[in-house]
Image (cartoon, rainbow, N blue to C red; front, side):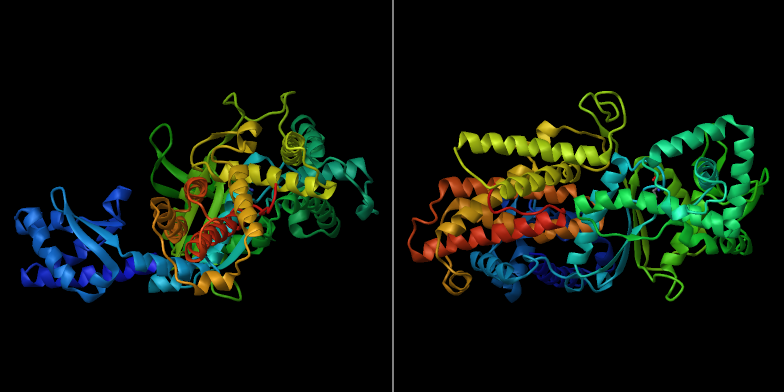
Length: 604
Ligand code: ARG
């Protein structure tokens, strides 16, 4: 209903402006016209609410109710407004409650049924300044030879959904995997590789490292304890950075090995993302220093080159620097991020020409991004009208509130976590089948438990306010009741059941006249028509949990309707009207699940 809301707002604005001009207060318009019409605070008040008369009362120094009476009279004379609105009611001290006409809502339902995006308008439909943009979402981004942990899982799931929402709105999205594939740790990894396999690494392609994480740990231990190993590792870094063929080969081997493991997880989660590791920005690091020097932002402090950050201090209250080049001349995580940011905003061909960059990482990196963004702003690397956002998220904890671990106290491998969820989903399914004396093929059981198991993990993550920590519980996320993926899938399955039993075609639904009488029908209609608002708010604030909350409420509203309002037993017109609500609920639900990266089911 965002398009209608926009039209309505425009008409209100014109009348407000006219009113201000007449009263010689034109200049306040800019200040007060924002958020002229809001969502109703309570459903029974109507669809929208306008509180401007309270604001005007302060400006005109008159009683707000009196102002409202005149204001409403003028509003009612406006053709557009009277076409859209049933009633403009003055409430309390001078609020205006707005209720849309039934036929307007029905037209919206019909048009959303035809719309491939279930009523979500493309971005350019709502505001010109927000027309098609190039958005980069930097997410997942694990590190070579290190464990891909639950933090990366969160980043992957949240980043994927955010990307999909921007795509739905018609933006062009570049999903980037900023893999940690460069840095001093490669010196020790390559040295270890050479020591263990062959000094000259003749058959480098044939080397298989069964467990890269163990390999990393072993080499780190040697690096910390053996002087000679440390020295050779440092030399190896220099060789690598100079582009020594053998070192590069060894580096590639390590990257490939990790990539295989990452790809397995991406396949299970059905994630597409373009790999562009830190090493990609290597050629641009030096010029970051030069550029900052030219702009006179760079300061040398105890041998390191840094930029001092405004408003950030350390424990002692001294200004905090962002180090861009270390004392030994080496670059770091921040240097790479600055080079990446500049490249991404640069025009093609030496850049991505992005309008907005979104970084999805754990909360622990918040200060890093504050620093990087501040330096980029000082250096003028963020073009006008362009935006950067850090999307931080909290920790995943066990039910004991501590860091998520296996029963033996080890870190949980993502692969194991996902397969455990599928395994438990299968156990639940088999129990259900037994209780219902139902027989299903092996293929059905395999696929259904996979969809539920993976979907449950994703949904449990996305349904949390990402900023807070959340407790990981297989029992909760796999439950058929509550705000869970199985509950949503179950609602979808119900609708598929209705579809199997009715012989209406989509054409019937679209061509017959539609009528509604039941209170629960109108509740469902109003809920369905809120979908686009939710999507647009996520595009702005990057909080995917809003979609989950909305879906949970939608399913509850639908299920109440389903339980209390007869559908298939009704006569033609009524039946078609109700079936069309089922169809739009199904469409909205399927599309939303797609946005959340969850597969749909027709039976479960
Ligand atoms: N590799 C980092 C990590 O594992 C995440 C990188 C996020 N992206 C970025 N541009 N810094 O924590």
